[in-house]
Length: 459
Image (tube, rainbow, N blue to C red; front, side):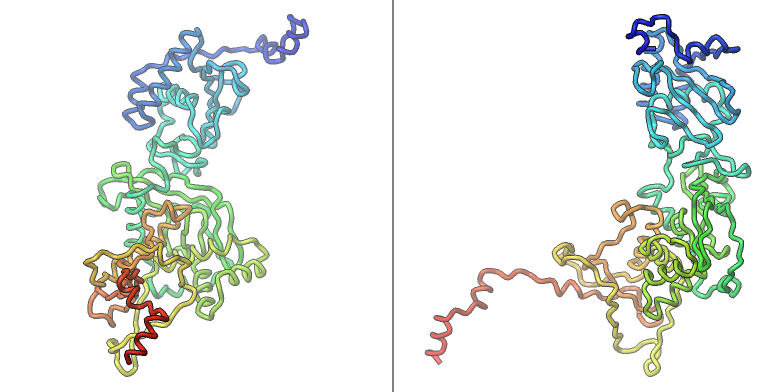
């Protein structure tokens, strides 16, 4: 129409305007109430800042004599709700000054002014509208991607939960608590039952992986957990015989303390690494046996790809998944010497070359002045296990609240329970720190040619 008007065709109408004459119904504007918005703030759907944005848009709509939000029905399926929201600025996504689409089938919010996982004022106003007109959509839980099957009810929230809501995976203290729970309650026995260890080429893996917990374990039998929350519908199960794709993984949350629970059930012959990649237990046992005969994980991945004809995840990802599995395994240390039994007078530790750190000595923080070398072995290796388990939740070490960095005063060797006298072991690595010498010491060590000649003449 703009092109036509510039050409002098003032009577030209576009197809959108011409189609209005064929409309058989009209949408009714809803007067959104501020007290409903205040109730949403109390329910933590968003904060006061977002509330003020909504109210400001409402004032702009009133001053422009335009409805703030209108629910449209354009023949789309009932699984979709289209909310037309006022937009004062004309742009490429709001040529007519109105935007937003809410899709209940995919359980996501869509707005042309932002990405799926980003919030915007139009989404806030649309939520305000639906909270007032159709509150049943707002359940106590929400999903990250798409809605799970009908047996698992989830909340109709946007694809990636915004900063106003609890995120999965959690961060900082909540993530530490979740890792501690997994370490304490999801241990894999050192000796697996025969039915778990036995290879199963024709095994049918479940397509829906949901945590078995129904009550919050902090208050067992008191606080029920939320309905299953979808994490992803594109998880993969790796096995010796191929990859099972399009697996749905879920988590649950305690509505009182906010604790998350995820699927971590070794009895199903599966090990959950990061909710997107799961491995068959027998594959882990295969990797363990290959490592014991000096075959690297990267070679094992190459073998699996040649064997199955399927592209596996990168070798580093498989290695981290394997270490995640070992960190959760309740290993038995049965060291004993033929001559000395469980308590030899000297314990000799061999060097494992693949455990070397690519780290400069100057980057390691020195110990405190009163450090005597005593380190609690159990606490250190528990911290290392938490570090490894937490890697299944974070993308990099920078976001890992359980990360353990090499240090002189925390690092500890591993000595079996039957071999050591207590949990306290001696770490003497700090004594090897190179200390810069004083000027007087340097002068004593430095021997010039003249001084050497004088010493020889005196002799």
